[in-house]
Length: 178
Length: 381
Image 1 (cartoon, rainbow over the protein chains, first blue to last red):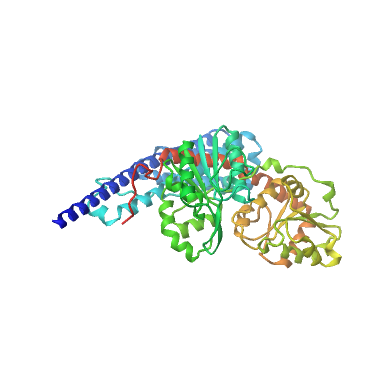
Image 2: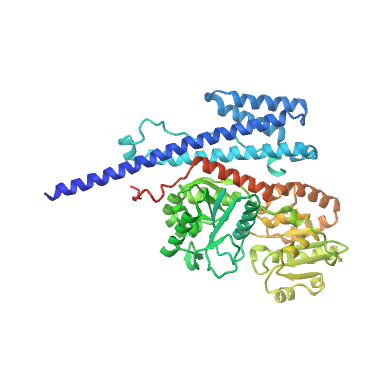
């Protein structure tokens, strides 16, 4: 008779643990969705700041055109190559705005200094958002890899989360002399 | 925004983390946010109105040294009370690895938790044993900030997870004070700031370099600010060069700014132990050209030598040679001064606060990482 109670107790404990883990997984996935939305918003903000700078008539025409082109490509890319387009935008930003000494004369105009500061902040925000998102992804992945979670398919049909890998360096000229 | 900040160290003990929290709180309050700071200590301490205390910390051996830590059931209860009463939108814990209020706060918080790591730590056995517990607490952070690359490396290597870099802040304009005539010297004024008997601050390196500098520029003078055994150190200087060294003892914030503003070279001969180097940024804000040893933290603040001069760590001869070169080259000092005046704006609280508030916004949008007290906890399998 005893073993019946023991079995019931063990099963009940297992049930509670499983439901708790499933709840944890569910919350993780909800946070991942939210942080993905934050990430997308921050990268939109960055390309918006680039467009503002490029269309303000502060930079030379060639730089303006290159920046505006890369920024609008990043804003209109499909899901499949969006991160590549964001990396390309970073490459263009670094090529144009990497040297603090080049930017020094531009900063004497208060309007230009404000536009550069705004862009610097957008670049930092986007880079921070990606780091935070990837940390959440790593945490969720660790949980999903646990044996019980895999065997019992506690995650349901939610796809395995992936880190977002792209180049979001802040150009040196924006980073130091803002 | 309603912000709760957990400070790991007693408010009445001077320290970089406390100053950072105080200045940041001031800027947040000025912008109309509500801030409550939780810190170890007693109620009878003379504290600003936004500080809430949880009781005296105790000294215990931890991680290879003695740490003053606030812990225990009574303190945990006070932390929970503070969290409940505060109704914070976001909670910001400082130095979470210090086993102090940060860890308890993280455990109980039901709102998003942002963490800031300040110091670089070397690994020790105690640290490794505590790692599992720390790691599971660290998973609750919605955002983790490090104030320097070294602090960030400590997080990545020893504690798990990644952190974004947001530097320490300072109020740049408060350092724009006039020079003091009494500290003027025809050949130039050098200055040093830091505890005199703390070898890592490197005063011994500077004093070893001083005779050569003084020989080359007999009308130069050296200002030394900081507490320590002044008489003993003074006796150790060659009598020919002794009178040109002026010891100021501990200085107020006003005197510190004035001393830096009166300096033709601010010398930072540190040989280690600096995670960020806020004092270099202060010198830059005051308009003092900086001559610093090539520690990683200093190299970063000086942008690899663009904003000031770097010399090998602990090398008195190189320090003397570079100080002599700088004293003889007002043009180069002026270049450093101009570049640094723009560069140091990066560390102004107006910018740094914008960046931290952006992190708060993101953390709130993503939501809290913990299960909170409504869910019971089971040990992990």
